[in-house]
Image (cartoon, rainbow over all chains, first blue to last red; front, side, top):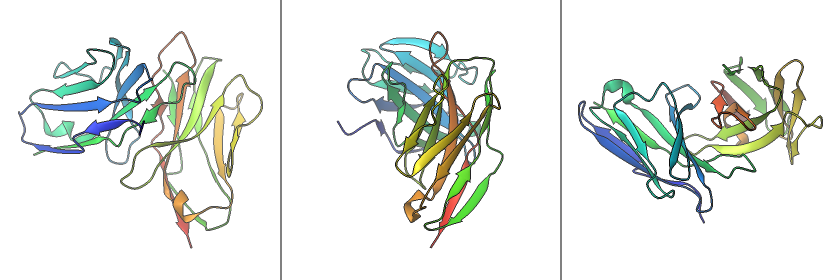
Length: 113
Length: 116
């Protein structure tokens, strides 16, 4: 297993368009996390899944954001009606329950023009 | 709410020297994890080291070691024999152990430059 993968790596979209990102976790990891990182800041938590169940959502996750992990494997993060403030790096991470280390993917950089 | 503070936005160190990165955090919990992550330029976040709050012994991973002061809520990272490849953003992070949120709470990060 080569680690957490994310697709696409870069996405440029126009304001108002919808975008969807995919994350494939490390295969045996049952926990999957989404974070957002803006320039000069640390990652901020968005949401997390244990298997297919979405157990926690941040207040940062507005109604325009939705995440799924339908079969407890890969996950998608969709942003509807994108705004310029959505421009950021979207990071995915996965882990086991124990040990608790979260392993990060390379991220998807979103630019909204 | 838990918060993590990295008060030094940037530091530099000469190759082969030792540098210490500082981190403080605020929590009312007694059982938690602390992490240091490294993010090289245009590359993904890499775990450097983990510390469990219940352990008194400071964690060590090769050239990386921590100074964990639970009462002071301080968690510093020492890098010995600095190498050019250590140049990166370093993030301190906190997580509850169980019975609560599994999210990581990150500091704002610190940019480390290693001079040859």
